[in-house]
Image (cartoon, rainbow, N blue to C red):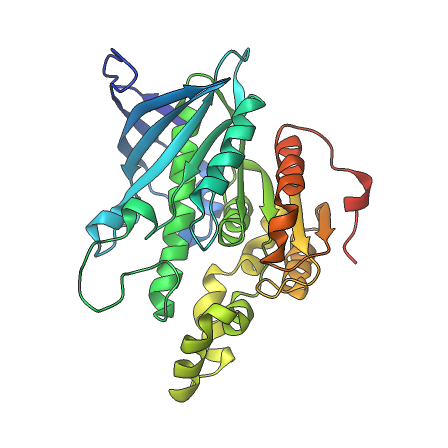
Length: 331
């Protein structure tokens, strides 16, 4: 399924770029991918610029075009950081790492570094309208964001994020030290929601760790504290949660969660989460064939106190370890 057609620049030093192409030639399984997330055959260019080496891995900046084109030119280039294990024998498993809604990139970099320390290649991908992908200036007083009052554009960003991760996994699979049969995805909060979609719809993503993720997007968007202004404007326009659900269902993890069945998936959730309610996490767990799940006694924001043990579990799981027994069932 993956064909790497490398047009490599000679790496003369740490900062010299590598430029190449990856050809994606989907097999018959692509027809089973839901239409919003389906990728057409394509050959895409990339650039990888080495930045530094730390311990048992190197870090490079990676860019490639998004398979989804938006009116915002800056958003149409995917920016990522590659944590490449050094000194590990054979072809390695690889994971796409996604960030939280609040764009705490150091947290994602830390997780990617710990994966690389264990010999797991990790590509930290910035989702649409984050980091370098957010346009400067432009019309309107508010910069464009992934999550905004424009729900249709928010759902387009969700679709683009999933397709970007699918293309990112193809880039990972083309690397000479990566085993294309051992691809995974992980993320926290927004990153966990996008990861749940990816593992559900992509036939080549076989492993996922979903932290603080859940389904029923309409209810999540309606209830989360950050969307109070949207909720007021939506209600003032005479619209209801049912209207919101019509827009979000085509991009809701619950719609596709049955695709998790038969894959290695770990969920980590907070039992008093005020953003991704426990009912939302349980709904995803149920629809996803009840994968192993860890419940921490925390909310969405107080989960900060549990992130280190949660990431240790995540790294161990993505490295192939079996989940502990207490993860067998949700409360």
